[in-house]
Image 1: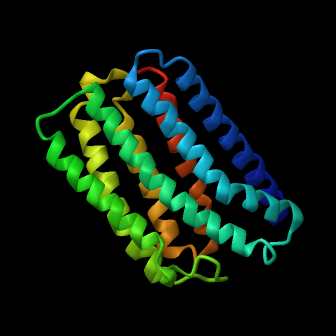
Image 2: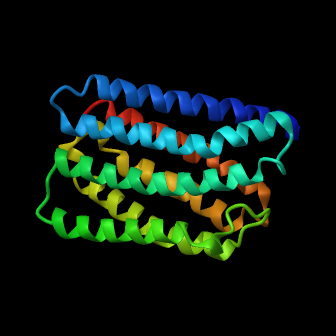
Length: 216
């Protein structure tokens, strides 16, 4: 049963990376004079490209059963993914600013950039123990505090401007679903490995978010 789920996860991960890359390339090709669409294409490729650093070793680990040999690659890949996800939310914020400008955009942009810098700096701290068999849960929580704050800010903005951006009117919900699935994994997956299955609906939420960008 565990083996079967692992193979399903591997196929899911590959399909996700391919889908994200295709959406990103399509958005770039069809961007023309549209800055938001161009940013969305870059955002999609940032997401898929960054996640590939973790998911490709993950798939190799599942297929080969050599998790120990791939631990370093998995850890470093997770670190890269943590950084690119931060960039993802910055790009998503700027897309919102382009599509539906608000008077409060400038100060909140500063806040978001500061949070992103803090988050990325925390990702480089050696205390994260990226390549350890069981990295410290405390540091997983610490580095995700500014990231969660970014998610809340971006979600609130899209909730406020939903009617002005019809194709992304539910972007706020996709963001909340993704964090609702991701944060329990950060906190409890080390103690309860089954919680890790929440990463699948979390990934689906991101694909949904990318699909919304096709309408801008």
